[in-house]
Structures are given as C-alpha cells and as structure tokens.
Length: 258
Image (cartoon, rainbow, N blue to C red; front, side, top):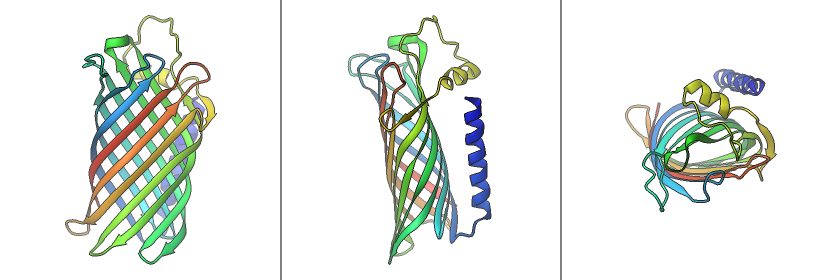
C-alpha cells in the first residue's frame, strides 16, 4: 500500500503547484480551532456508542476565482465513554487531509456556486481501555468523491460559506474482527504500519463519508477575516469481513483568515 501513499503524495504536491501558478481573485490561509461531540460505534468491539468531547485544529488554503481550489488539514483528539461504563481511558484521534478542484457552475448576483471532484485521506484511531486495552481500533480511507461550495456575499464585507462533500469510491482498511496476537505495541511506527495495511476497494456502501459545514465570515484586523463555523461529519467504514465503524462528529469552531 506504500504505492498508494506515494500516489496520494504526488497528487497533493501537484495540486499545490496548481494553486501556486493559477490566477485567482483571492487566496486565503485559514487557521482554526473547533470543539465538538464525537460519537463512535466500533462494532468489531462492542455494539454500543462511545461519545465524548473532541478538540480539533485545522488549516485551510483556498483560492477562489473562475474556479475554487482548496487544501485542507485537520487533527483532532478526544476522550470517549459509553452510558454503561466509565471509560475514562478511552481515546480517539482524527486526521483529515483533503484537496478539491471545483468549477464555477453558477453566479447569481451575490452568490457563487462551485462543484467538482475531491480526494481525501481520513484516519480514525481509538483505544478502549475498559473493553480491550490490548488492541488498537481504526478506520482509514482514501476516498474520491464530489464536493460543492456556495459563497453568499452579505453586506459590509461579510459572507456565508456553505460546503458539502460526499465520497463515492474509496480504499479503506479496518482491523480484523478476531485478532490472535496478544498485545499491540503502542509505538508510533508500529501503529502507523498496522493501520495502513490490507486496504480494500469499496463504494459508498462500504466506504461512506459525508461532510457538511456552514461558515460565517467577517472582516477583522487589517486585511484579515474572522470565521465562525458549524460542521457535521458522518462516516461508515467496513472491511470485506468484520463489522463496520460508524462515526458522527459535530463541531463548532472559530478561525482567522490571512
């Protein structure tokens, strides 16, 4: 699967070159923080929902003109628990790398709509100390899908930005339902290795991911801007054998655009 990551790296590098060479009306860098509620149902372990608070930092590079292009990074961490036990030691980490290239399909007065393809890598890693402290549980996916962005200009240098992304195809990896080895070695290199093997191709029924967000932007200091956002993420990843990982994460956030 190393070949797949090399391909993904080349895609992101090429996309960065396109962003740097294009002619756009505006190019912005957004740095943000969000807090939210994560709900995860790891059916390889327990048919119960774990939920808790998750904190996320994010970076967005976007360029907007005759087309809309973006590079996105998110890193989140939270603790999870069930309603039937105090899972104080359970944790969840989230990673997102995404890029999109959207064409302008409609412009009507103060609103502009873009639509196009999107590629993303998402990773979710959990440890459930109460139920199984010996093993890691994860869901990784490299997905290809469609995304749309709607910009609505408001008065006095304010705007509303609405996004929606849906994965259509993907390659994903999940842990085996029954693992015979006794214990996970919780070193960075080992966790990365076991989380990125045995990728399998799937369509939306086995690698479903949906993201939607609404963002209010207003002018801030100088040429910078301030953004307030709400986002929703839904995911269902399932291997050829075993049970799925289902996740829903809702967040509210604040960001600064430069």
